[in-house]
Length: 223
Image (cartoon, rainbow, N blue to C red; front, side):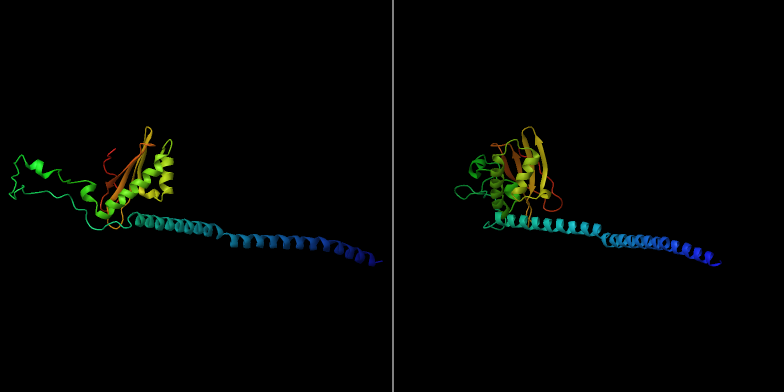
């Protein structure tokens, strides 16, 4: 009658094996799931920096295209413009008969006519910038004339649409119903800038002179 314990022992062992198998299976599933998560994390972890680098490259490419378009626009505005310095008006030093005029001669003022400018765009801008400034003034004024409620935001958008970069727009401020601004148009050693006053049909855009080098410093306003 000793066979009974052996049979019972076999039954106990047989009933434990499914539990052990299930436990092993559960551990295996958890291990695989954990490995899968780690692999996914390992593969996905660079995606954050990679996306950031990709975004930086995209921004850099967009900035490069804008700079290229801005340079092309400046060249277009200066197309067919003369080069060299802008000569000032001649100042006669002799009278009608060829005799020299003394500096204290009251007729000097009459014979010399308008006094030659000594400062400002007339003498500080070269011929190319002087010519190009007229075209910039016209296109900017035309873009702003029909603008109702010329707020700084609206003025900036129009200037951007015309190809003028944010980094070239300075001192954009509103005063009453008018928004004033400067645009740095320096290129190839020039000193050109324009000053604008956006006020609907009373918009005024005029040339101005920027520093030769260094950061742009808005000159004293004319209007």
